[in-house]
Length: 437
Image (tube, rainbow, N blue to C red):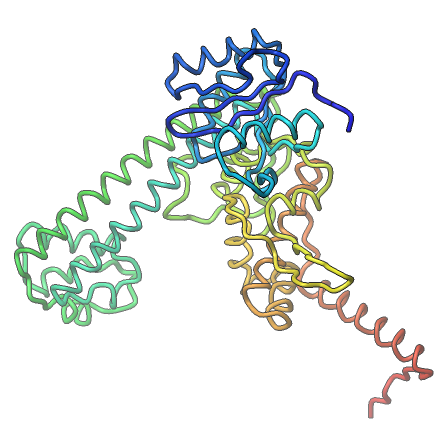
């Protein structure tokens, strides 16, 4: 086989040390072990420079590869991050030395494909958004702890309020923590938009306020509010980053959003529409199911350069939203989508799930797929369609135009009729419209 990369090295990543393999003619010890400390990473880069290495391949092992990846990029190496599933060692002995040598050999012959790695600015935004997402999940856990403490006291607040962390719920909980126990006085915090009246809420607030459960409730409320404060700090940092990075503002005022933004409890604490329009050059929130928070989360994972993928199909494949056909001997063994931990794909799936009652073409498509395939496969199919729309808008900068539910139904009925006519002709029959009496 032809050696494509003559100056290639392979690195087996570990938490405590890294094993590095270079071509055998470059050093008396072509395989060396380096500790994972920062000083050793720079020593590793110096050794690669001495050996004349220009390109390096490494596995994406946890988060341990990130510091070394950044050090090697700073030194000017071409670093290729590869999927561990694609570089499984040949049958035989398994060791760190064999793994790094196998990586070096595959990379020498040009048999490794680089995994997706966004630009540095996108990596920074992605870190902020992932930190925010983690805080939102922690806040949700503390809400569950609050609900558990209330149930242990037999305070049925979750049964009479749709959200215990709303205006009414938090006012009642604060009074409970302040030592107030009168149900009728607590029920006076009822917001006018609550479905249940004060008498029902007062009945639900008659409980057994044991000290240990009140203590647990107090700590859960403290942690919840602390998470909310940290989320606010993340929002401020994200807004500051968006103002300082990305394409420069050309002075044009972005057009108003095609769909008015909906208030969301976990939404961003600032108006990100103008920043998103400047980054993408098009209103991506016009896609049904996608909010400003959703679009920013996706862009933080994918970046704003759609040319990193050759087509919308490749983009959907990277997201894990297309069938993973496994064929052997002409027989389809499986066509299930490949399991993939992708935050952007999760956003598309959540957006697809929210289209169940949407009066749009995508909503009609989701309901048709749900009737035909069931809810899980319908969510994947609709998420795949949303991802392709997202890619096309980001690549072409064309606005989204919804044809509407009725137009979609007419087109679908026309396709069904065309298929029935084709099947009838193949069987030697002809479809004749029924006479309406």
